[in-house]
Image (cartoon, rainbow, N blue to C red):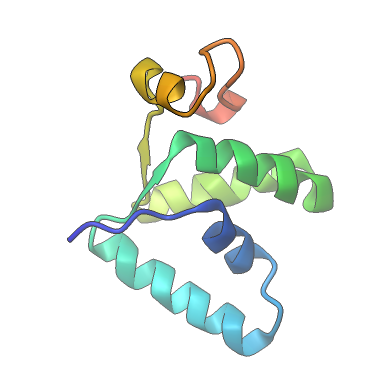
Length: 100
């Protein structure tokens, strides 16, 4: 079964409330990446928004790049999915890293 990461997981990985939880999050992410962990593009957009406010946008983009290099896959948010979510393509803009 493929796992899907959410914003909360990535934020917990970046800003763990305790060292023990940070270590568990890191282990979990690495195990799930080996099993084809995926994350919708909106998760990265939200991560950059929230983590970028604390550590800077460049640092947040670097963290995403590192996760991608480890094997985290990005699931694009398609137009049909955007409409189902109540948004339009003009309301959701991908971060610069995802505009490939």
